Length: 242
Image (cartoon, rainbow, N blue to C red; front, side):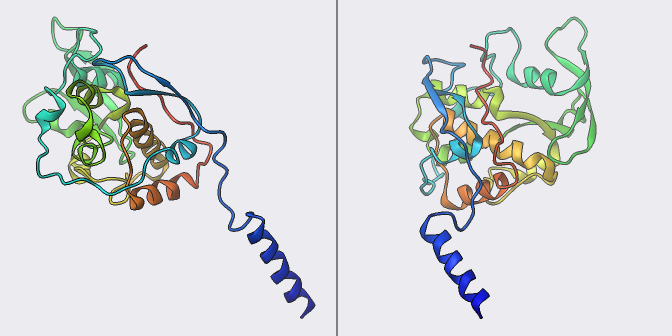
C-alpha cells in the first residue's frame, strides 16, 4: 500500500513539474535568415536546428480549397532554375542516380543509371525512353497541390517557381510509389521504407519552413510521431547553391 502511495505522489510531482508525459527533446530553436528574392531562392533560409524544433515554428491550420489550383501556377515544369544549363529533372536524375550515362552529345540529358530507391528500398534501373522513363519519376516531396492548400497560393509566381524546382523538394523515386502518394501529406501517406521516414518528413518540414507554408493538425501529429524515433534529425537547407 505504501508503495502505491509513493508512486501516486511521484507521478503527481512529475506531471506538475512538466516532466510527465515524457517527450523527446527538440534541441535549440532553428536559426533563420532572409533570402534574396528571385527564382532559385527560398523565401527564408533555414540555417540550423533540428527538424523537430523547426516543426514547432510552422503555423498549424486547415487547408484552403484546391478548386482553383493548376500546375501552371508553379510555372513551367522543369525549368533551369539554378542557371547551370540543365533542366531541373535532369539535375535531379544526375544527383540521385549512380553509374549515370548521358545521351550522345549531351552533358545534361541523362540516358541511364541506377537508383537506390528511397521510398521502397528497392534498387531500380533507369533507361530513357517513351516506354521506360516513367518507371523512375521526380517527386515533389511536398506535393504542389498540398503546397497550394497550405500557403503557396499566397506566394508570388516567382516564389512558387522556386518551390517547384528547389532540389530540397525533389527526389528521384519509384514511379508507382509516386503515383500512389499523389498530393498526400504525412498524415495520409508515408514511404513504405520505414528507415527513410525520418528523412522524408524532415524534407517536408524543411521545405514548408523555407517557403513559409503551414501544416494541418493531423499532419503535424504524424510528423511528430515519426520524429519521435529520431529527435535529433537535423533540418535541411535549400538545395539551391548560394
